[in-house]
Image 1 (spheres, rainbow, N blue to C red):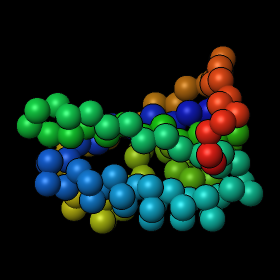
Image 2: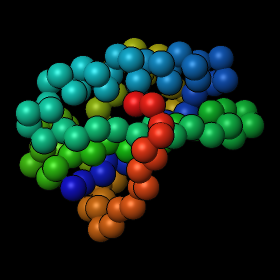
Image 3: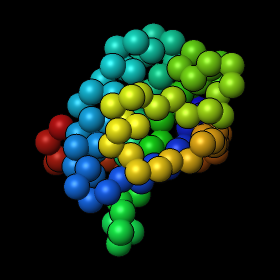
Image 4: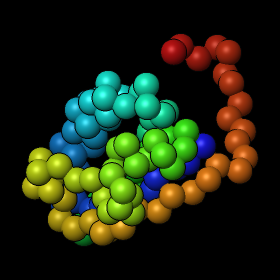
Length: 113
């Protein structure tokens, strides 16, 4: 399992819009397009850095071959839509790809899904 990690920053006024775009537009589209080709899900983390809001996206794929279906042959280059570019104040120009080496997420049987 591969985790594609990337960071971008927004102004406070754009943070909720960008967050909503990721969760409600971008990643649902990625799921529709790539789920059969190795896409496995995403996490979005955000933190208030004072003058800006920093976002970290963690996008999960079953292999580097699956990452390449999403990002192309130069998979370190981020895939950023025009809509996202308008909301971001700046962003990393490189993605990192980590191999999952361990995992533990206790199940809460009483939590509504």
